[in-house]
Amino acid sequence: MNQKSKLNPAKDLKRRIILSASSDIGTALAQSWLEQGFEVLGTFRTHSINCDKLEHAGAKLIHCDLNDKISLNSAIKELSSFGRWDILTIAVGALEPIGKFLETDFDHWENSISINFISQLRFIHGLLPYRRQGSKLMPLVLFFAGGGTNNATINYSAYTISKIASIKICELLDAEIPDTRFVILGPGVVRTKIHEATLNSPEKAGSNYKKTLEILSGDKCYPMSKVVDCCNWLITGDRNIISGRNFSAVNDKWGYRELENLLASDQNIYKLRRFGNDLLH
Image (cartoon, rainbow, N blue to C red):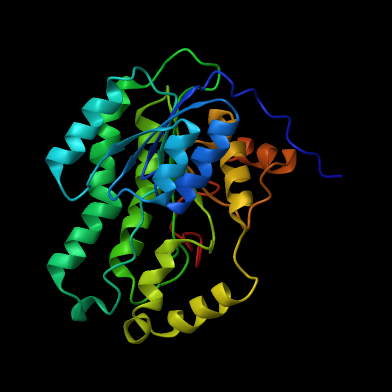
């Protein structure tokens, strides 16, 4: 019989930062945490209805443009002034440029790598010294993954490469910084604004345009509520079970002891590895 996990208390992880709290997933997480009584600090690039909702609920939001180092460094400084943090969530994602690698403007491609990876690491690098030590579960840095881990997602090379790099940096930081947990979650196809880029580029998106349209127009999206539940489960996870790993909200049996026992027994599960090393031996 599959048994539900016995969750560790995460009540002492009180101060939670979200890079791009204005994003749909960022907003959903912030709302969940605010309702539970946690302090939420977040960033936005463009003030939106989501920002109004969060500020009304008690979140403290700061402007941050990942394309601007001055803005980014200013946000880091302001966020650090609130004191030690417990959870740092990276909820930024942009699919552009969409199209074949050789047919995209390389400056645009390079900028996508910066937004989806480099600038996010600058943010993490600046705030890691301000993590709070002493909690039972340790502080947590939560990334979000995308497609392309097990196949080639053509026409989305910059976004895909950035997400693959995020998976590896999660494992590397876990190995280098043993007093902090690092985890990355693939949320699946969720109804968010990120898909507008695909819907606005039917020719460049190729077959993914029709696939995305079918998923969004039907009842095939993964529920946002389950993404939030999965994140809240990860937050309660022991370091040896979750840290350094790439989870899938859709495909993994999260929330069950069976998975936790399996992960505790093998540190290679849910990490980037070369397949076929034992072939022809």
